[in-house]
Amino acid sequence: MVTRSGVWVAIAISFLLALPQARAQEGQNVGSEPNGEGMVVSLGDDGVQRATLILDSYSYSPAHLVVRVGKPVEFTLKSVTLLIPHNFVLKEPVAGLDIEQTVGAGDTVTIRFTPAKTGIYTFYCDKKLLFFPSHREEGMEGRLEVTE
Image: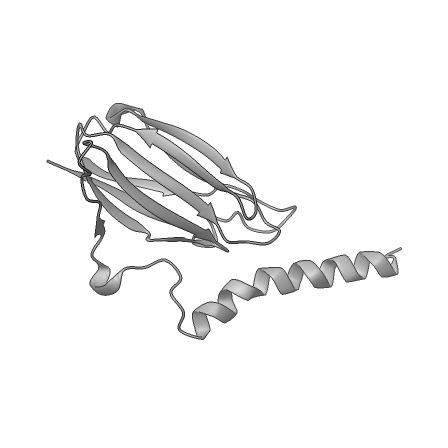
């Protein structure tokens, strides 16, 4: 037997899951760069490459970042969601990348790493709610391009 409160929870979850699709249909940025080119992360005076990634419902923005090999990288992960936590997973041990960082709803977290090998590597959110598709299956992934 389904209770009245159970029905309201299901309606609320459905509404929250529909928000990203509504934003995309309104033409708002959902994590892609103009012309499909990645955002080149600049090298600071201290030798660190810094960028901020916005974690929204099913998207990273920017979703394609370009960094230099062998130089330290610092990403500020900023969640703009109200209820749903996300994470940043980048597992490429051959390139010296083994990151799994949770970012709570509305939180900001900083991660640091140094890529050891050139290539294009996928980062993603693997969070999942009950029987719904994972955030990655809903399109929450991006690319880290490591160049010379």
